[in-house]
Length: 367
Image 1: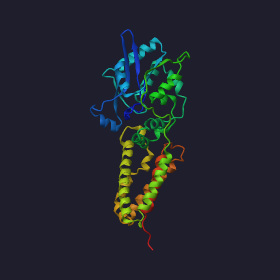
Image 2 (image 1 turned 90 degrees about the horizontal axis):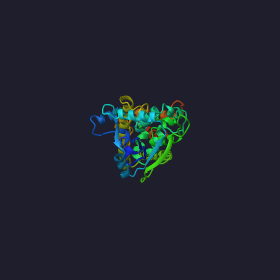
Image 3 (image 1 turned 120 degrees about the vertical axis):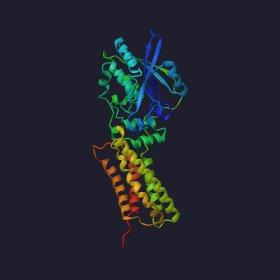
Image 4 (image 1 turned 90 degrees about the vertical axis):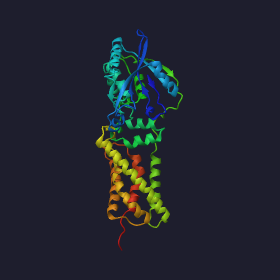
């Protein structure tokens, strides 16, 4: 069963579950991976460290669907052509997995989420046939492209994902990898075959209509927005921080760049912390730390001099040059075949600004 994305940020990727219809017992049970509880002891600490504990929840189908109906989320049901032995094995596994002592598992947004757990359970019951069919095929999607597509209606979520994820999410996915998105898993199941070559999905039903807007079919292309914003910021601060600019413009520009330097530095420290101090592997080796540079925190000492129209100290000028050089390295990495991270948007936004600021902070030459 596949549930369309919802409007809440945690529901933007959609959801899926395995329905076990047991006529003998008169029950229809939905087995849902990916349940979490904000009130769980230590949830926030584990979340920050990338060691989240999520769980498998077994719920009556009618009770579970009621919430999706209220939210206006569409739900489809795909009946699968499995043998009785495979069906009983899958049911027994899910019953065991839903026991209190077995329900918790370590969650990963891309590798161990609600959809990949469903995919893996189905594949195990089918003797590995899904992975054999999907592992060598690809649509060319990446973890990032799918994440940005599904988060694009919430700009803060889109920008946070785009900024915080490293090169892991930029490699092309196979159909098997695409199963981390519930909707993509449903698409792949439509193409899957049984061991004897027949279609795996024998019937598909629309259980609930879709009453809210669906995500776009592809991620938005905002590169020109980033580029124009970057050039605009560089021009604005270049003029405002010129020694001959009006005093009011210099003070406003210096105050604004101080806020930006503070933000850049703190974000950079956060990116480094995700790499060094957490298990969020998708955030490791993030080249955006070259653009959101922690050295920007040292440049805060230059704000008073910029407001006065004076040249800061040589050390501050060197720090500004180092920040600009790091941004240039981020641009250089785009030409290396073994560096695949999608950083072009952030380079277009911040490289012109760092270059202009390094120029403005250069020490005055003696006559």
